Length: 511
Ligand SMILES: Cc1cc2nc3c(=O)[nH]c(=O)nc-3n(C[C@H](O)[C@H](O)[C@H](O)COP(=O)(O)OP(=O)(O)OC[C@H]3O[C@@H](n4cnc5c(N)ncnc54)[C@H](O)[C@@H]3O)c2cc1C
Image (cartoon, rainbow, N blue to C red):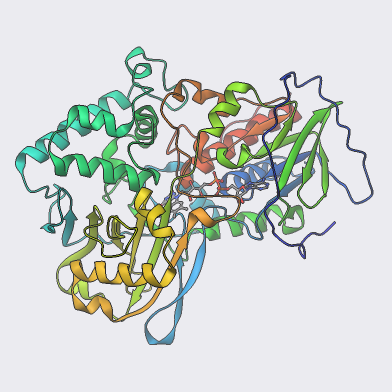
């Protein structure tokens, strides 16, 4: 059955409040009709994690009858390519979603290699800008940030060392197994930072970092989530910098949505059903029935869900997910980021010895309802073909405030803020494009679901299989959780788990 002509309205989905959690006692009361689709394994979600899971199963056991169902009208989830006008009347592909990869992100690097995609280094040469601890703009050229005082720098470095020390004890697989960490579960990142840092610029550096890394304000997120995230990245500097080994080391030629497009080609497009938002997952009688918002019903033996926690909380499970897991996923909102890309005729900032990098508290704002200017972080986004561009983010509560303004108002404010760092030439741009991720159906924000204080001791529940339903997704990763690499890691992992239940006698090794 083909579903390609149907509309992509968001389905009305609710949390289930059924009492029992015995997955063997549920019974599928959905009668099969001729339009129903039957398969062995149904993967839900055509983001990198779901597609990786489907691809791995197909690759290792091509005989598996596999289908993939996706709510959106496209594959890629939190990766999204867009065409933007560049110099000489051309257009080029830029990323409005996930973009950077790094050499320590082995899962995604292996996947890029397997798909024949190439990377190129992030441009970092030259002077950087910092606007923290006040409105004044400071420049610096080394990897040591300019916080305006040595005392601020010392406090920041001591804090980074402390976070790294604690993060070592805080694996995402079992974040609260250490007593010291468990005692911090109810503490927000901001409260923790304030206990350790008195210098305003150093404190703002951590608050800004949290806003950009998780898309939420430091007052909203458990410091234990931040520690687990740091653990998964191998240290806080790996999240903060754009140097070798960090999260912002390379960009992918042609954009990252190609990862999903190529995986979809390899899986077989006929197996992928777009515009089918899953609303109900019912288990019983040795099978699973999955119902979509448009009334199409899938019958299968096993399900792999690659749906992010905030969206999973909207799917009705029968038997229901455990109360602990329901409480957890109901308190894992997506962050807020608006990502923008601006193209230019020339890389005039490079010519002036600047790297294009800005870290900012937003600076002053003259727009009513917006307490700060829009910029949180900016990087050089010049393509591998040399088309000059800058990329930046409006993040956390600053994003929430700017989401209520029009695109024109944001565009004007972004260009004017960029001009305060890079000068008047910024105003002669070719095109501005942006993506307000909070408005994206079936995603509802970005870059990742974070955990509010007090729940990280229940975090392992995210990964537990629920009867015949298995789970993947970047939020579940133990390496580079929150990143494309984490999505690949969990997709591969869950594929092995499902292949094992399909063929218990076959020995499988990680690829
Ligand atoms: C602006 C932005 C910048 C980022 N920057 C980076 C970066 O530089 N580097 C990096 O590594 N990562 C980055 N990320 C994060 C990265 O994109 C994600 O970690 C990764 O793509 C997540 O993949 P996933 O498969 O786990 O989830 P997703 O991509 O969210 O896929 C989940 C899929 O499930 C679908 N779905 C949801 N609900 C339902 C339903 N009810 N029924 C059926 N389908 C459903 C969704 O539509 C989606 O397609 C960024 C993300 C954003 C948005």
